Structure formats: C-alpha cells, structure tokens
Image (cartoon, rainbow, N blue to C red; front, top):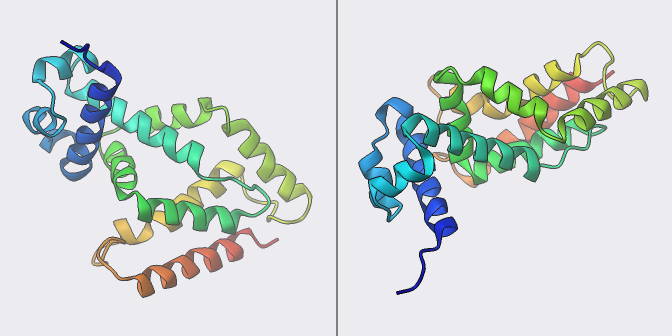
Length: 191
C-alpha cells in the first residue's frame, strides 16, 4: 500500500474549505461537506486542523498570504497596484469573499496583525512614504489609510448594496470598473 500524501490531503481539505467558507461563512459552513469535497474523512480533517474555527483561520491565513505575496506593490504607482488588486480579486473571488467573511466574523485584528507581520509590510509602507517624499503621492495620507482606501475601491462592487458583484457581470463592465478603480486611485493619490 502506498503511503498517504499528507500535503496533498491537507491541500484538498483547504481547497474545499475555502469554497465552503467563502460561500457560507464560518457559521454556515459544514464540516461534512468540506470533508466530502476534500476527499478526506472528518477524522483526518480534525487531525490536521483541530476544529472548524482553526480550519477557518487556516484558510483565511492562506488566502491573505496569497494576496500579500502575489500582488505586486509598486509604492510609487498606487493606481497600478489598485488595478492589480482588483484584477486579482476578480480572478480569485473566493479570496475576496474570505476576507469579507473574516471581517464579519470579527477577525479584523487577526488579519491586521498578519498584514503587519508579513515581510512585505514595512517595505510597502516605506515605498508609499518615499513616493510621498518624491511628490508622487499626496503627503497628507497615512500610508495605512491609503492602503485601506485602495481596498475600499477594490471591494466596492462586492459590498455596495444593490450592485452586481464582479462575477455577475460581463467583460465590458469589468473593464469599466477597472477604469473606475484606476481613475479613483489616481485622484486619491494626486499631490
């Protein structure tokens, strides 16, 4: 009998949990569905992750780390960063949903701590400050507030009441929204 590939099993569970939590949140997610869709037993799931909350944290942490690592951050070009973040969230809506669920579930302090402890955080803040010193970004912004504003732009269509999210519209509307993100970021950053 071949040995079990623990890493592959854990990844299948994480993938299934990401879909489940992204769709139903922590309260509505069901361990039975996660185990079934991850092709693992509930016992394996609990052995790897402990409990449902710990599994939610594992998915949230993985999604947040992926967003921090995969999205380029040219501090001198915040509009391009905003567009890249928007495109990433359109490509991977489950990450955006998990970040929203994390906020709704009271995980904001945990997510903030994770951001500030990420190796890219200090260089990101320094890049914004340098762009401010160079006259590229308005100097009145606190770098953390500027990052917050960019996330607000990117998440706007997903959280605004009465609007179709980014998965429910066509390519023309996505392109228009991308342009809105870029133009708004330009105006926010303009010195």
